Length: 84
Image 1 (spheres, one colour):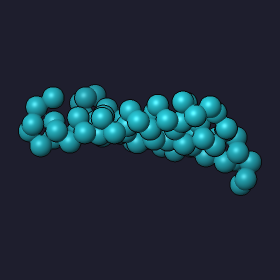
Image 2: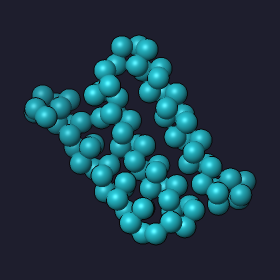
Image 3: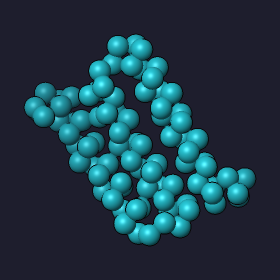
Image 4: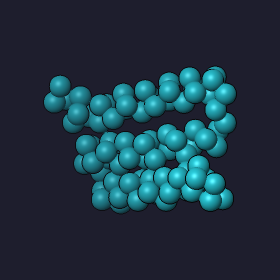
């Protein structure tokens, strides 16, 4: 189990599950824009986690994590009817 996390493959599994979820939701009629807002922040956080697990430089960890927040806010704004 330790090797699964040290190699970053634990995060790869989560990303694969997110991809399967995106495909499933797309088949159920979700638009790509909706999927980007719904699953994009999660995917970015998991990419940051993967970078941390494999010992990547700090910017490979912080950039996806930082980008997840504005994408999440855009999704919330769009869902609440605030535009974007």
